[in-house]
Image (cartoon, rainbow, N blue to C red; front, side, top):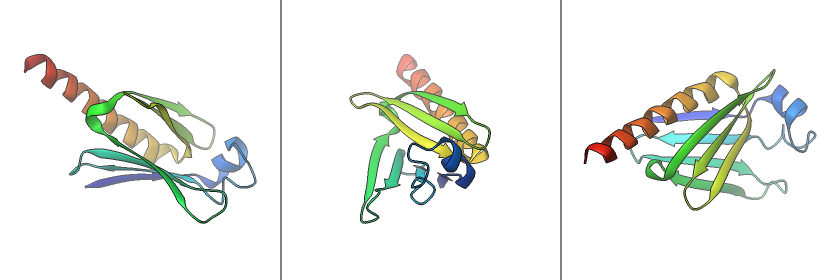
Length: 115
């Protein structure tokens, strides 16, 4: 199963880094439950390529959810790479991803303690 979240138009206009371009190239985040990894992607501003970060669940250490008036940001703390951000996502989709990531982090910690 793949869980997705994409950028919100209004959130990108009000809270985006480059307000006039972020609505054109929004952030996108996908969780592939079968492969157990997270893909954070954004089309670059030249509209030619896509920048992607792929993170396995086992490297995920912390997830933070920051809600705005029209959207939300997700920050993923990862071993080895620091923090990966997905900005200006739709609130409902970002909240669902956040809750799923929290479940995965807590289940990984439980399995390492027992085994």
